[in-house]
Image (tube, rainbow, N blue to C red; front, side, top):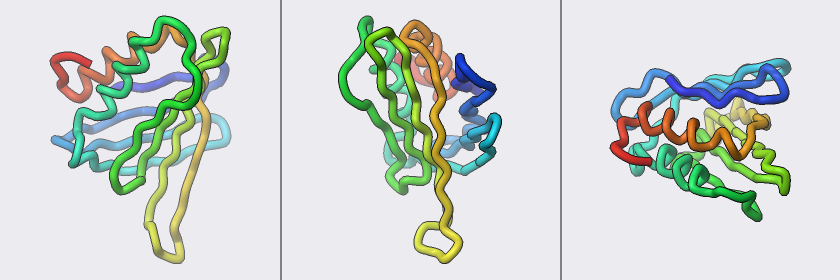
Length: 131
């Protein structure tokens, strides 16, 4: 398991129970609770690589950096303010095309200095030699 803990609330994104190219994502905290099974079959180490790319930034970046599964059941983006505040926007969705389709999005606050530790944790979770 690895997780992204908010530095300003009890919100957390948890990555659990990885099996090959599948894993569980939980978005928990005050006001939000959602869980989704995720398949990253086209790029099982892509999220770890994306976290590594974010960790390589020594200074705040412009714009939004994003990663998503091909089916779209999990999307994550990151922005970084001038002071180094990083905001992850996490979106989980399910039952696409049905009359009970659902989508949950929430932000998780972090900071630029935490990204190397998050990238390392993601690398271990996805069994990557390097992130």
